[in-house]
Length: 345
Image (cartoon, rainbow, N blue to C red; front, side, top):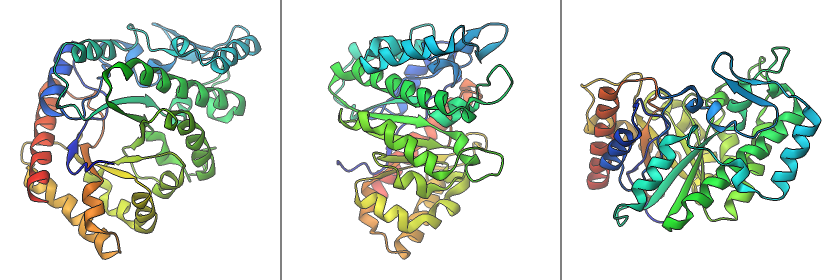
């Protein structure tokens, strides 16, 4: 794996109403690892759950009630779904332009530009636990509790990721496929049906088909969780965490992290705050935060050069709920922090 020290990318969502403005920002500030923008302010269908719901069994979306599980014939819908899944019908699982206008605009821009600076193309899918936690059955119960549906959604979301790999394949760039999983902050709570073994099992399955197509697979979680379960899941190459607020907790997993890095893992430090962003923050200050975390891990026995070689940075979370001015400031700070790390670390 190439040296990734200080390489910057984004999480996914941006607060723009026009896809081209979002892409302008991405290519200006993260040109080496650009990503297609999710635009939730444009349309409810671009919300992080609705965006990946097309053709998944039983899911309906309308302007009045949003996304819900309301099958006409549950067994028949599951049967059709598995027929398309087994046939590897990627087109059946595509994200259509009405649900992902930023994706199509991004593709077209890549077609029309010089790609010599692009090292990676970053894509994303909502992870299965976050996805299912946001959908209720007709009785008001999260479909996380329904093992049959949960299994189908894991497979369906893997196909959404595979479709993206095929769609961006013509550019000949390495793809980073992130699964966004804020729900993982709930794992271990008495109020969730999900345990660490469920997470390890689901992501080992999700990554299996992706890894055979030579992409990097990452997980983004913007809160605190049991990070060891993500480091143990087979096939996960990158972990993206909120390093601004949760770095002290993350470095507690030094032993697991050491093993993860030695088998090729990468840590993407979400060092630029989103909700806590203000103009007083500087590249030097944010870099010092990362350096403090690196120093702690080195003291715990992890090789510093290994940490630096496998170090990416990003905003702490998506920016969809902010405004355009804040997004510009956050990505400008991200870019300057990336340059500072690459020059001084």
